[in-house]
Length: 330
Ligand code: SF4
Ligand code: SF4
Ligand code: SF4
Ligand code: FES
Image (tube, rainbow, N blue to C red):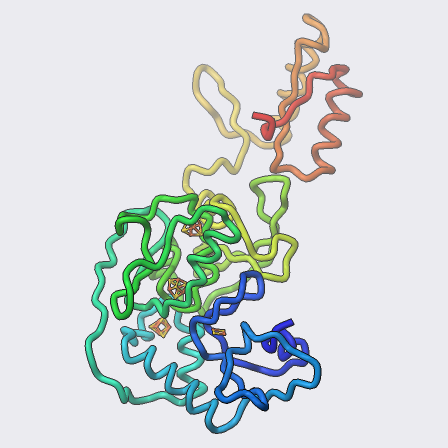
């Protein structure tokens, strides 16, 4: 158990930027500095294990001064365009600036200037907003096992990027977006679609496969603009590219909402009653003329277990065939 874990269990707040309980401790941001009795200097709570009889001060004047200076230094090389930033309202850096009441910049100097162009379809990368917490790099390697990005260069030039600074070309699971504490990594599909405070959040289950990951739909002006997942869910907040970014079908004008029957070479919209009656008639006719095994049923992994159970029951008991399969086997 680290000091940070123990503090959280006891409901004691210690600010962090680079910590995520689902990742290995890293000790990059230094915001979690605490004073341990008998130690000459403050230590990072996220990397220091607790020991018997240890006395820890999680907050005092000196520690708060150090933390405040760290946030000031980060902000001194940060675009500070919260007014138009997608992350505003859900940004750890913004929250820290608020609680440390940082209104003026004490440190002036060179600022990083990076090109934002990245032709990948899903993730907007604005490395001027990166605080080098390393969470994206670690999640990509530790959780996703991909290692598509890393911290390149050193010192002031240190920067998170794919190899050779090429455009991001990975699995696009978006775990990196989900752990980024600032607006450095943002899903492209939500850009300009709604402020955090106006978003309605709807908890549901991903419809793509039988894993049934818990997801939260972010709805703005009656449109899904983003999908997230909370760390305390069955899937621990991790999603795949389909669950994270494959939601545009919901608002697609091409989406089928009513059954279609092809008549005279053209699809016609019909009611469910008409469609089901048509299917029933055709199934009966095929069975009568060619036998039950002339019919096969293909179900979907996107259905629930109960729906798939009913489907195989229908094929076996009502139609009379064992020709049943589902899309997940392909
Ligand atoms: S990343 Fe956070 S602090 Fe930076 S501009 Fe966006 S909201 Fe503001
Ligand atoms: S989207 Fe997934 S695979 Fe791609 S860089 Fe981010 S974490 Fe790695
Ligand atoms: S891009 Fe985000 S998660 Fe990655 S190091 Fe920068 S601030 Fe941290
Ligand atoms: S949370 Fe401990 S150093 Fe960042």
